[in-house]
Image (tube, rainbow, N blue to C red; front, side, top):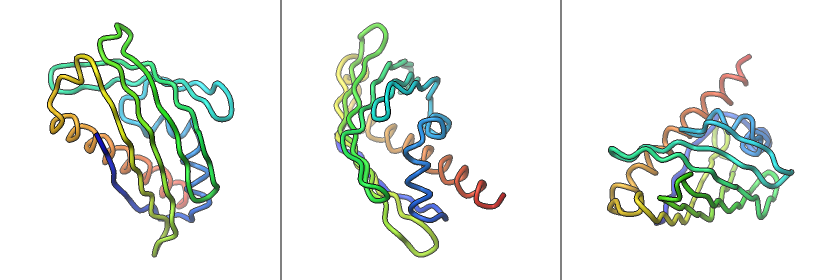
Length: 151
C-alpha cells in the first residue's frame, strides 16, 4: 500500500531537517509512539500502539536510515511485529524537504506492507487509518516547530 502526502512548516528547511531527524522530538510527534531508543546514529527502536477499528496492536519496530542528504532527503526502512507476532509491518519511506513560500514543504511517501490480523482489514480501511495518522503527525510536528520559532 502506498501512502503519501505533504505539509508545510513555517521554518527554514535546515531547521526542519534537523528536527525531523531528531528521534527525541519525533517520538513526541508520532501518534501512538510509547518509546523510542537510539541504537546508533542511523538505527532506532520504537514501540508504537496502533488502533484500527476494534483492534489494538502494539508494534516493536526497528527504523534504519538508509540514505540522508541534508537538508533535502531522508530514506529509511521500518520493520517490526506485534509482540504476539499476530501482525507484521514493513515499509520503505522517503521524506523530501523543499523550500516553499513561508517555510518548508515536507513530502512523504511510504510503501507499506502489513500482514497478520491487521493485514486482514481491507486496503481502504488501512489506507484511511494511515492517512489519518500522517495528518496527525504533520499537525503535531508543525505545531512544535512553529511554537519553538516563536519563543
